[in-house]
Length: 185
Image (tube, rainbow, N blue to C red):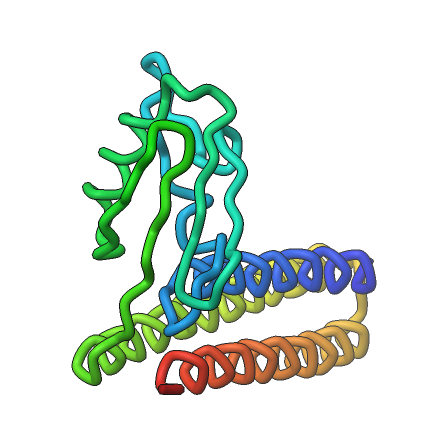
């Protein structure tokens, strides 16, 4: 019973890390990355659709992204979506392909992005701690209902704390890596 609860906790904690990595991938650094725009929701015939499903996105050069829509009729809508986003990018289109020049980040913008990275890593840490709290409550409930013994409860809580510490450390490393990437000139 304890092992199942711990396994479930680990799955949820891995999910928090995966969500953090996806969030951080969308934060702009000095280099062009398709992850910057692939999650933008484009209004495609009345349905909000991720850009990744509507176009091929590539980074042929370090400061350039190209977006080639599968359906050329969506080019204007994709351009509007990119302009409306908070990425600060201006699309250049020739009707078939959209080019996005990635300008170098200013020092002020870099520090703003570091603040965003820190807040996202804190959200991930809170998420992992919430998983720990939920699992602790479950384990205590098992002990109250005499499903597990007091010793099993103690062992389970110790293992849960080790698991939590491990994932919080992974979150910290991931956040630190992204901060370094953002501050890199």
